[in-house]
Image (cartoon, rainbow, N blue to C red; front, top):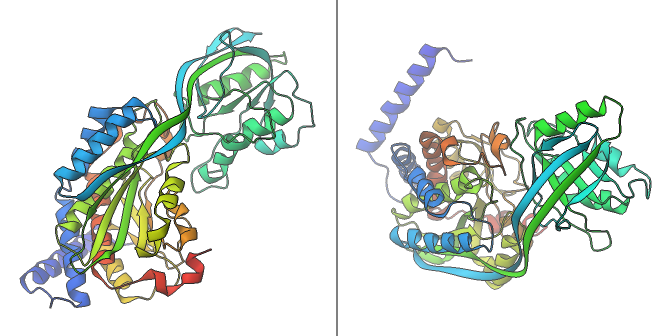
Amino acid sequence: MKTWSGLVCSAVLAATAFAAHAQNPATPGTAAALGDTAARLRERALSGSGAYDILESLTTETGPRPAGSPAFARAKDWAIAKMTSLGFKNVHAEPFTILGWYRGVETAEVTAPFPQPLVITGLGRSVATPPEGIEAEIAIFRTFEELQAAPANSLTGKIAVLTERMGPNDSPTGYGTANRWRRKGPVEAGKRGAVGFLIRSLATKDDRAPHSGALNYDDDAPKIPSAALSGADADQIERIAKRGKPIRVRFTLRPTIVPAATTWNVVGELPGRVTPDEVVLVSGHLDSWGLGTGAIDDGAGVAITLAAAHLAGERHPRRTIRMVMWGAEETDYAGEAYAKAHAAEASKIVIAGESDNGAQHEVGFGVPAGGADLPAVKTLAEVLQPLGVTFNPAPVRQGGDDIGHLVPLGVPQLGMRQENSHYFDIHHSAEDTLDKVDPTEMDKAAAAWAATIWVLAESGVDFRKTAPAAAAK
């Protein structure tokens, strides 16, 4: 552990080295020059990247942006105008068709033995209840495995309630695991005869703001209405259950479902000066759930990568920087649509990255297999170290939900990891609003992305050649 005086000394030495670098710039075309420019971009972003202003504009002028909705159409127009104003070329929207799902009336209550209201929100793609709602006795399951172990027909006519608590993100029951409970819980309950499904919100904060998210129905299982309970209400149901009396719940979900809604991926480019046909793709998703204003999920990711790409592009790197704002990440359609539309040119994408983990600073990064010992990667690690970003030499396994659809086409993926200890406090909830965002934190994130984009776009490093077999798996 460094002492305070040691930290001050280190900071002074780093500042002195940077000043000396500025007075004696490295020879153009060398690794030192690559790092020199990346460090300058880092410092430029730290002094004010513009990311927060982009996010403020998006959330204020469009509000929540469910994929395929009129609000998303406004966001698409906003994105085109914003990228154009920042000097991006070939700015355009790429339409594709999705199942549109837009929340409507959402109510719930305990009707017996102790009548009282509950707070819920529908799970994305849930079917509707009848107009009068569904009322039934509930069956409580404390774990997802307990629900899976329930016998066939044991839930006939009942509402299944899963109260298992999601753990911190780095725990065995973090979001990566808990997401499966929400995705597949309705199917498991429906197979056993349930008429409805309620799940404790996947969140790391217990309040009365329920957290939404998508579910995945199976074609061979009944599709039952499904919603998320606030953490406080899930606890209340558990307390009522301890009284030993049967519990009855009524809930109503009346979403609007559009079988063929149009949404868009929005794309813009900063053409490379030497090899414009080689593309460094960076991205964030423009759509959001309809509860908050999508500030951290994922307006921040859009703003951070857009600001960083703009700053790196001002230095005119060798390769083209392509910005993609995904049009239906939350409902799982955008990445697949883009991969299908761009399969023929996938070999030109030298690497793809995605920011979708909040508005905090970056804490780590990784590259594809075979890239850990490349000089450009080592240079980048040195540049990012003052930001507290550490390099993970293990090959990136998952760089983002949307870019994951490009991996089978041979596109290598970048892994940028953010500080996210409080991300799931407000993720997918009405609390996801701009007041939760610290502009300085966004600048730190943009600084890491700007330096990274520059190194990847300016250097000759080609991850398509370091481990093509691994990239194609």
